[in-house]
Image 1 (tube, helix red, strand yellow):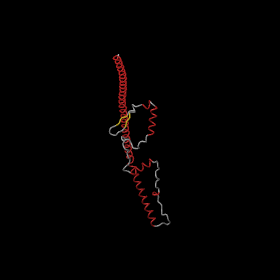
Image 2: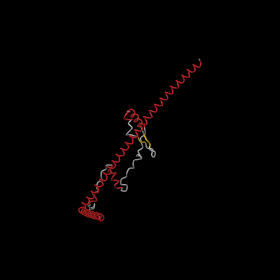
Image 3: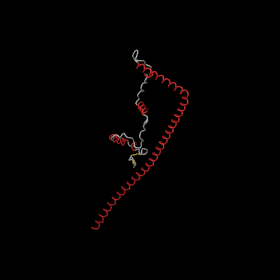
Image 4: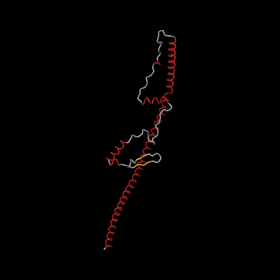
Length: 215
């Protein structure tokens, strides 16, 4: 199987668009699988060419915690309905401090209702336009994400096409060089066999000459 090594990072890369020895020879594939089973597992680190993972909400711990909750499939915490109630003093007739606390709670609830009324009025006045603007921004963000995805797909397809073309070209060169190497090796063997035959013929002629000289 053909492999190439980069000089800068020492990464091994095969020619998957060209090498098909494993498909042509199932026995070789079984041997490779047995060897891989004996090899230790690769480290969990990412490939050097893969960018590091992008951390979401690094500057917003609340959103980061909410994202972790959603990823863990934990339910939302129940709403605190006690603060929206108006409990009176627990004892009868109640102490002055308990009545003051109940009064402060009533003032807080009244202020909360006033703020809610103000927010509802603002929402009724400006909410529809704000919602339209928000939807428009979301649509534009979605379109930009789709365009980025299409560009990434096109770049990926182009990269795979370039890899396939380059590997096919290199594979053709390797095949031609391998064929030429086989032809040269065969020629060398033929020359060596011819030399052996010539040596035997020369020895025979020397022997004949020696017999003729002796007679």
